[in-house]
Length: 279
Ligand code: SF4
Image 1: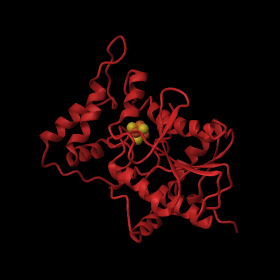
Image 2: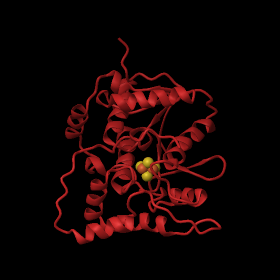
Image 3: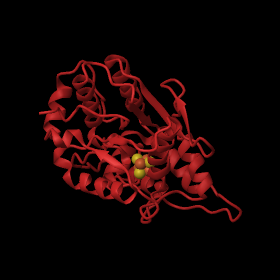
């Protein structure tokens, strides 16, 4: 039987910078004898709000496993993306801020345009720059993430795209991924809820409170985006319709002894996949 990790190009491996996605990349490289075919390409789309640990992890996966990972960032002009590297990658939310400036208000649950532009369209623009019109998108969703796979398949079908889920085909579950990383000489070094944009508004309120408690400075960027007037009418807006980041930070400051017991809801998949993507 052919290995689920043997990929036929042209194919774009979407690397989220999380453990699951990195495990998939490792298995794909192994299945190809240590070197990917020229038309199987790996890309990581940086929003500028990723944790430093994520950037270091992406860099380490590339250098330790000898695979070229294209670091991409959204650009508001053609070709729609720029290629950066570990040193030059945005770390202060610049691509995300530029996108909000263009849209003139922060994204929210109803208008999740950040995923669509910073991740999905950026990767598509990169594939187009390779001259690809039709290609396979290889996505790191596990067997135990069936609902996300169904969403992804429906989304792909709607937009005439082709998706592949090798981890699901190989029946890989979360425990398998964690077991793999426990045996490796390096790791992501983040808690399960700390992946993707540090205070992504799609993370539950308790998770965001916990992150603000652990890293109080992280909230400043989000408060700035909510309070910066944009456009001719000086529009401001919240990411979460129920509470501003300033109010959330204030609540955390006033509740210093509150212990937040949170589950290990995982945010180490590509953000467009855990939230379903789309505008
Ligand atoms: S992680 Fe959250 S805030 Fe960041 S691009 Fe994805 S949906 Fe938007």
